[in-house]
Length: 180
Image (cartoon, rainbow, N blue to C red; front, side, top):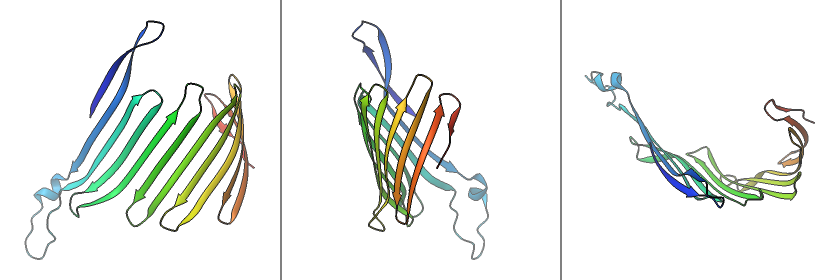
């Protein structure tokens, strides 16, 4: 794991540190598989596991990119690829775009928008689209009312054969409850 930190001077003169980049590379090694005898028609040894790569970039306070990928060294294929790009502003508005891929299982594009309407009220939109099936998996519209230690959220989700309305009440520090 490698990180890159930036020393930033705030407008009030205070110094703070911000992680601008984190890169993690890992791979497993099976010692028993490496020591296994290969006499006769036994399959070849494969002691090396998949390579996991994680990258988090935040070059500016309002922009972030993350990547979570897995590479199979035995087949030479990318098993998983996941990317997320998020833009935000100091007010709390945000837009996120994500791409999810798992070989032979999933290929999906996700979009998420949040607009701060008032200091206590947010509008939300989420879209999930399957590229394997060329169809929208989920489309969700919501509104969230926030107070000092709680919030309540009303969401309407449309899926292929289902429409769901949910009311979620959250107490900060305790979790969420309620559905409809």
